[in-house]
Figure 1: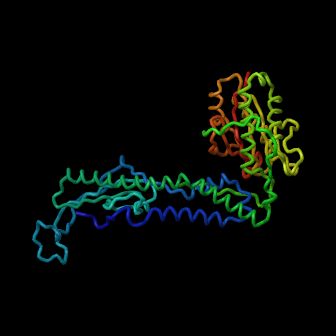
Figure 2: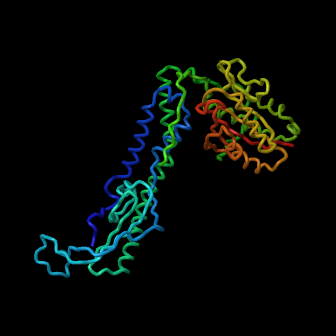
Figure 3: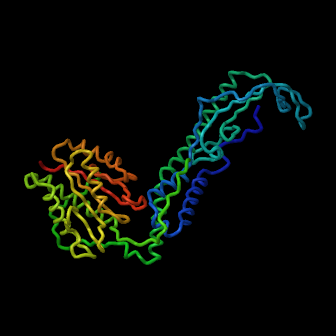
Length: 412
């Protein structure tokens, strides 16, 4: 006999609406931040906070902890029992029977038991849901243990099946949550900057030099615990010069293409030192790009290998190094960070390998970078021998830079 406290599960609310509500609430929070806060806060740290706050935790059934919560004598209303003659069915007719209640603990948000996923059935299971347990009760005049056990196992399997549907939808939402948060943050930043009329001050236009022969052109090769909300400095936001991603990628492609020349003509580059290799990159970069803000955009100054300067500030820096173990890369990252002290700087480290098995060097690079104290996250980067990371400035975790590490096997 069915327990009156049991509900039909997975049908009361549309899970799509719940997910949409979570996304909208996150968007409202981002729109509600102060202008200076959104412009100055660490995007990665804010995404960490928003992701932890708005992700939906799926339900996990703790089947190994199922137990009998209660059992004993009870009154059972048998007025609708077809095997009994009950002349007046307008009121209960009780007989003594046995009640057995199974309890299955779970973890997660109980509200999800009431949500219908994008995949569902027309005969959802029934159960009583408390804040931490699924309760299934059997009340029988003459209970059959084998029948009760079989039915209970079937209902548990049915609940598991529906939870998989729910979890699939939740996982898709959670997996895209961080990127959605980052996009909303960047969109709001862009709108604020446009309204303030400072877009021109933030951009550093670089145009392709006309007439430069394509001496080494190659075809493209397809390769719910919420953390604390991050703080930002209270001083008003001041726009900084920045290199846009399109030109950043163009610079990195020129550098990568130049290495292909080295691979195809190894004798011409055999035995070259780091400084000599660097000069070849500078020649190609100066030939293919010209700076709109400075007469000599790419130059070599002091120990900085390759840089772009605007208004006295370096907005692109690349450091060259020969691989000599983990420490050599960590030292080079520290050296590069010493040159960067402003927002959204694009940087690169060119790792040349000569004497060590190249595949082992490539495999070590991301693990070494993650050990650096300024490491924040690794970004997607479609390259067989390159990796991209977000690091923070030495003195301010809200000031972030992009580091692309490119590894090259050069002639001995």
